[in-house]
Image (cartoon, rainbow, N blue to C red):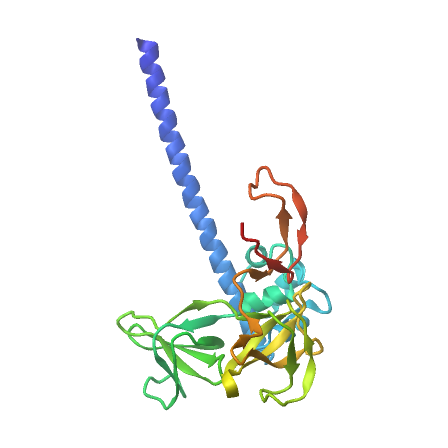
Length: 313
């Protein structure tokens, strides 16, 4: 019938409109994601530039203290003010968008540490050299599995497709230049998380890497440390790292809280270890009574810096 035919035509038109709407929506979302990525990259680049100018390129804690001006978080207003001061070229709207992506509930000390951190894990043998020139003096070999802390402003293209980074080897603190990709596109490193450790047993925090160096204080089970350097092999299967203590509640770090060397392995017994069952919260999040978002009830707010243990079912 004519009514049936008209209905079919209308139905087809509706389906076409729905499809076009979905396509347009996907395009808008892709564009928004692109704007977010660009805003975050520009904002972090500006913050790193400011840190370099102030001589705090490798000290996110001092950088946070400078920006936060005594407060626990960096507000949206202060964040935009700082980016404007370094002439980042980022409009205020995009600066606010960047902050919402980095830390929607306010940028904490720990949040800034994670935001500015750039670590790579070596996946193939490479060498640290004295300059960005490929044939410059070799400092030492870097083995697969080692962590590299990328230093701000240290990237160069030493040829077609060849990429090199200025970085610091976490194991011993030695800085130099390393090839991260060759001219054929083969990569030698992969992105890695900033290293943290938690105390599996009570352990002593000491001033130096020597086992008999003065004690700073005793660390308790569950305390969290930011790895600064190491691990270093010692006598009798000992393993030691240079770490900075983190407040398990706020994520704040300060020399007064504890920074020094500690034993992570002693006679084959592990005292401090990275964990797959413990996580440090880098931004405020809600803890709920069940996994389903639509049906769950909030138990309490988890603040940045709190330590969470994953419960295996």
